[in-house]
Image (cartoon, rainbow, N blue to C red; front, top):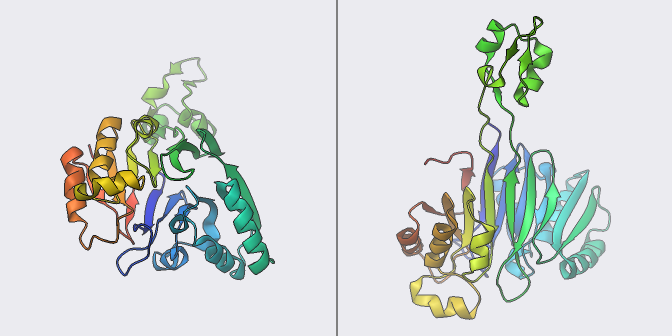
Length: 308
């Protein structure tokens, strides 16, 4: 089973507190790190969680409110000081690329890595793809342009049944063909179906990240059927008016999105600093969608571990 871990670095909302830091997550895909939002404190949490700066090559910024991007200059400066090579691509709105580009060119002019900005907008689109995963954007409903990110693993190879292959005298050079689904034709012309020589591939996992957004039917459609959903849950029921006014969601609304979208697991986050105990938010979300957990700094979630 391939590595797919979600590391939670920041689960608070607009301001840092002694309990929570602003939004930041790191997705570990087979040892390659992808950061999702970059609030203040991101680089310190990476150190605490022993995530290697050298393996971080993509940073996805959902929107240009400071609690989702103010950690970016400091993080990139530290990576430069550590001598990180290769390329770092920041997926960000045009205004953000211009502002952060000027800032980094002033304070961090000599960079050992190539810094690229991939300009995104609120249209649904694939913005990154490699052999293991695709990353797509979808629009959220917030006070300024804002997107969610959908991470989808590509279909995985089948598993070779070593005992069955030995009995059928399948040569070693044919194993990759078996993993890709090919039948084996023996020297005497006998065709041995692939299903007799392999077992099913591990399921391809999907994860959707919804940062700041009102409860939205279009979000429900965008995340339909994903395995894991992170959805902001800034407020409890008693602050519904504030949620509507400020284009945020309540924990109950996050649970409603998860239930109506038919996802498997829900992770809460982006808590207002008015809460010193988020258990009430968990309770309200679970009343709508029982398979909900509270996100917290320092938490690592194995996304492959989905128990029905």
